[in-house]
Length: 191
Image (cartoon, rainbow, N blue to C red; front, side):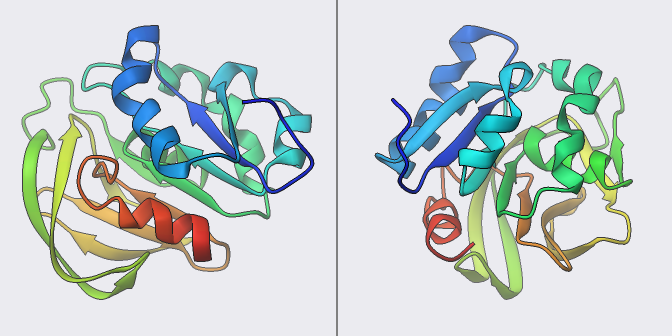
């Protein structure tokens, strides 16, 4: 989409393989609707960040960890004062940038979660409260989120939803574009 001076959402694609865009980025674009522009994470510029009113960092495929090799490209996140939503790999990036720890077990047995699971949101989180079914597709988990985030729900294998204690920065390890699209809509409306 061509950039305009009106309200814009920056959607960041972290997929190494171009074909994965259709599974992990395009559904986010469809939910966002009209006022967005999408950039590959290596191509995000200072101008892009200035134009954006909010940022969504999309997830990627189960075996794509390329973004871990370029965490310095996300150093802007610490100083960014606009809302951010990190999905799956996007949440892992947020946690890593703020000094937390992503559990990168090469075997993947400890944190591997694929499919639908139920989570209990005891407090409201981007429109979710109570027991909700979500879709997971991740090999790595998050155990240590550092001091900057609050945990909103966990699965049996790890942390699933977080929010920065001072900024409007949210992370979900599950994929709301598959199930719980209202998370993205609520982020766009009130995040």
